[in-house]
Image (cartoon, rainbow, N blue to C red; front, side):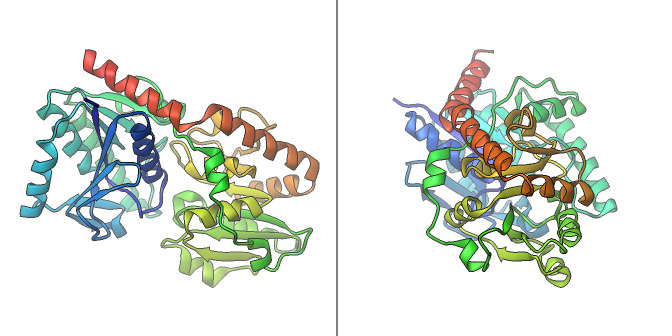
Length: 383
């Protein structure tokens, strides 16, 4: 009889983010390896409470209060919530994995594991405190994270990071992490999934125009303000263009302050994002914090040179300057300088793009990550 592994993730698709994609891809790969994967998430988008994915994985969606635009879902402990949770808890369970450490949803996964006398795995996906762009709110979020982690530490849990930096970040909370269960991508499949959209044609670019893309949520911690200012500094360079794919609270600000060299594409489907990255000359993500950026993996899969801040799994993906540009600060000056450096040397840019594309294919596959997760679960069960 095959094993069953439950993955608790507070946020999940169609919400777009690294944790959501990690959960989806891990579940699908586990199914390929003969393990039944069940995703337990929050019903932020009022979808069906139960769904079977094409891979055979099952998704359960619990009723919730979608606070902060759905980014902080709080369990709605009504009768439907209790009924569905009891149905989930009563199922045969061999392993429990919890993605992210500081949501109330995390404790539902821990309780599930304890009910079956299982030691759960908690995977941390950050490398710094969550920020929302408001000093008062950020301070409250920081205090919340410490409080909820202190409560979590009262349980028997094996903690892992999604990157070396995430594992190290756990030390901030007095946690000795067990290792790294890194983010990954099926690079060839992702590249081949690209839609037929020709973004260079849609954006009316000339042959020699240099296209810098960004993909992700339009929120302060992704460095959107700094990227906008860098675009403004480069507005006198007619051959450098920017394309931002994503949506979020900063969209209206971008629309009002567009220097004219920046295209706002809104939220794109995954295959369109792949097409955009293939059409781009560089990918820029001046983010403040990442565990292991999915957007970076996607850019690498599309042979697109990354320009990114030194956060999360970036040093693992870009060990030196043969593979991309690591920004030493989030400043708009350095972003603009790095873009010009890449744009002015097409031969070097091509080499970096090829190197990062080959690296992601050899070192960061979902098959390897799923095997590591299963081993972590098995080791936890022996303790």
